[in-house]
Image (cartoon, rainbow, N blue to C red; front, side, top):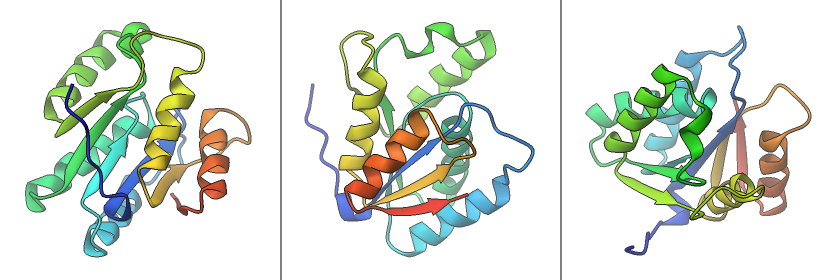
Length: 157
């Protein structure tokens, strides 16, 4: 496997819930990414989960049509990530993996820590986190706490 080289200062990662509530604003989220691109961000790390990750991936694909230099990096926690996705989610997941500019798999197989390892990888290779957080527990909150500890800029949508 070739080494993935990421310019942290130009990289942004996303974290958010698997459930998108009625308050999720896709247009506002697109505007946030557009502003980041205008600031010089060209690399976007996405954890490939259902929900916010999928929504961000699709927004970034749309923006990549105009800003051809931006890269979407699919950060996969383990090869079995999509094993519990439904049929349509699996099809979309496979499509997105093919569309990604890079795919990095963080663990050879599922462990109870592989999601956390993926989240830490994304934070460690970014300077900004775009997040969708509506609950005070879970992986998204843990990722934000880690990002704050590491001094990343947090943008809430």
